[in-house]
Structures are given as structure tokens and as C-alpha cells.
Image (cartoon, rainbow, N blue to C red; front, side, top):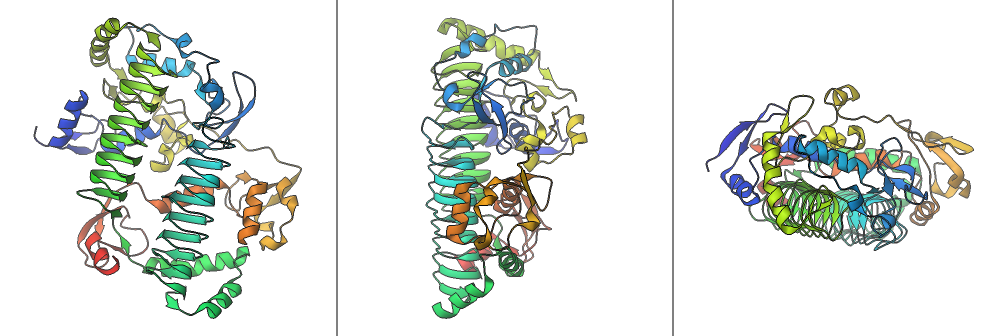
Length: 564
């Protein structure tokens, strides 16, 4: 088919469907979308809560758990280990298909009834002592870690792989150890406040450095040692400067942050960061081929409109699609194939509209199933019954589409409507990508959560009154509740965290994890594409940096000519 321009029924903006897109839709046996790719991503993101965690009780045993579902959500939940056990049966919630109601209304009812894992981890199974994390697997001793795997002793971090002894890192691509406050790093050791760097050790307040050690306040260096502000100064003088800055104090760290800013903005940035790629368009894309409009993507092929995937193949509109192929408009689909409109599907095949389903195939509109086949709305059918009913349901979805409050229609092939999500909009990943006010969210018929404050301990302290130096922090801090310096959020320091700060001579943080993580999240990538001018040639380029972003942005070719 030829290229076609359509009008998004959500944002009313025009969007283009390319001939190869039509080929993909035909292969997936779904119609072409009526939402643009950004609105499709917003819709998917509204079905995932990654970082907002609550105290709950397991509805199976009454044990205390940490949950992504608020106490007033109405969602029944079990601990991850309980959920994966044989102590309950998802078939008990099966529904017969009702041709008098839209499919998505029936599916939403099922999702409300079937118990969910309190967090999406394998804690107690493949992970150990990681109950205060989410979207994590194969890890040990992790606390408040989101979207990660194969970690040990990591805290307060987002998207990290195969790392050890880390705090406050974001987008760690592997083999990082002993780091604090880093973004977009790999193979770095004992670094703090280091960004966009690879193979560095004992560096601080550096940007875009490779294979460097003992560098402070530097940018764009390659294979250097004992440098300050990009100048080699020798070991003795370097150690004197580091002592002068007193980075064990909050005041010294803040001084270094302030002095780094003009240096940081003076270092040219690559418009789009792609390494080892062929025919790709995206940001933070590595070793991939024919991947378009993607973010944080590794080892993938023929992948479009997605992010946070490793080993994706022949997929569109899918986030966190590791080791999967032929997946459309889904999130967290791992080691699966031929999947449509699903969320949390592992080792599944030939299915549509799955929600927390493992090792299953030929299922449609199911939740909580394991090792299942030929099921619709958690009801078991024979093979013949399943394949007789399935085309009738798909036709029914087109003949009786779900219509949301604002009149948007949803047919077979569409992701479930955002207004049916069991997460409040401001708890979901959508709020970070596409922020809305409470009024705007409610006008869209989305749910909204009011902030829930943690209970105060007997001892309470404002962040401004914390000791300046980590050397002056006593163990009493473990019993205190701390009020963030920049919001009404409250947080605590745990023992393992305090030990890390003392070992690495790092002052206590003055903000909660959620504020620190949101700041790093924006530093990693904007998750958007912008048309802007190159600050070197003034040519029009596409970039993940907006036109009003601080600093210099060069085209890919301009950057490579000077720095690679």
C-alpha cells in the first residue's frame, strides 16, 4: 500500500502510516491505527505504575506487602511468590463471552476481579530480598529499584542491568559497580555524578568521558587520567583539589554541581545517540537494525515506536519487549511471539489482550493464567470451540466497539482504553511522559490519586537541617523521618544506604527517591523527538533535545567527526 496520512482521533493531529507499517499490520492481522504513535504510547503508559508504591496487605494471607496498587484501588493482590504459587486458580474468575456488551467492558471487569501480584518482581523466586522494588528479576538485595535485572545490592535506581553496589543510577547498561548518581553509563567503577560515560573509574562530575580514571569536572575526554576541568594536572595536585572540594559534604557537592553546569552546557551533545546501528532513528539505541522512533533499545531489529527493549524483532508500539517478536501495542512482553494489546506476558504465543499471563498460547482476553491454552476471558474451551468463537468475537469488537466518554472508538487491534486502567493517571508512567493536571485528567475520564503521606516517626527533621558532612551523621538518622527540601514528600534512610554513603564519603540526599529519580529520568532522554537547529551548522536536524533545551546540540555526523 501507499503512504497514508490520517487524523488521530485523540489529539486530532495528522500522522503518517508508511507502506511497511501496513505490511506489519497485515502480518499481525490488525487494522491500521486510528491513534498517532504518541497517543498510542500515552494509552499504553497509563496502564503501568512503575515507581509509586504503597503499603498493603496480601488478600491471600494477610501478610504485609509493598504494592503498585493503592489501598483504595479495589484491586485484589497477592505477594509475587503467592501469586506465582498454586494456592489460587485464575480459572475461578472465568466469564462467558457476552455478545450484548463491548469486549473491552467485559475485559475490564475481568481485570478488576482477578488478583494481581503486588509488584511485578520475582522476589522469593529468582530474586532474593527485593520486595521493595518493581519490574525487577534475577537480583539480590535490592531496594526501590525499578525496571532492572541481574543486580546485587542496588538501591534507588531505574533501568539497570548486571550491576553491583549502586545507588541513584539511571540507565546503567551493564557492569557498573560502586557508582552513585550516574545516568547512561556502562562499565564504570566508583564514579559519582557521571553522565553519558563508558569505562571510567574514580571519576566525579564528568560528562561524555570514555576510558578515563581520576577525572573531576571534565567533559568529552578519552583515555585520560588525573584531569581537572579537562586539563591533566598530575596525581598529587589532583588529590589536593579533591580534598579542597570536600565532596563528603553537601555544601561541597552543591558547589561542584553549580560549577559543572556551564562546563556541561559548553560540551556539544549528539542529537541522537546511536551506536553500532544500521538504518535506525532513535535515542540511546545500540547494536540494532531498522529501528525507528525508539528509545533505550538494544540488540533489536525491525522495531518501531517503542522503548526499553532488548532483543526485540518485528515489533511495533511495544515497550519493554525483551526477546520477543511479532508484538503490537503491548508492554512488558518477554520471550513471546504474535501478541497484540497485552501487558505483562511472559513466554506466550499467538494471543491477544493478555494481562499478567505466563507460558500460555492461543488465549484471548485473559488475566492471571499460567500454562494455559484455548481460553477466552479465563474460561476454558476446546480447540474447536476456541477457533470457532474467536473470529466471532473479533467481528463483534468491530460491530460493537467500545466508546469512551469523549466518543473515541476502540475496535479489535486497539490497546485497551486508558479510561479503563486500574491505575490513577498520576500514578502511571503516562504522567511522566505526558503530564496532566488533575482537572485535565478527570475531564478525560482518567482516575486521579491524592497524595498519601507516610506515617511520621517520633523523630522528624527537615532536609535543610541534616548534617553537612557524612562524617557527622550518627546512626540516629535511621530512626528519623526526613522532609524533602523541595516538596512535601517524606523519606527515610535505611542502614545499607547509610553504610554506602559512609564508605564512599557521600553526603545524605536532601530529596526523596521519587524526586531524584524524576530528575535523572529527564536527564536520560526526553522520550520525545524534536525538530531543531544544529548549534554548529544551523542546519535543521531531529533530536531528542528540544529547541529550548540548554547546551549545544550537534548533528550526528558533526559530533562523530570531532569526538568519535
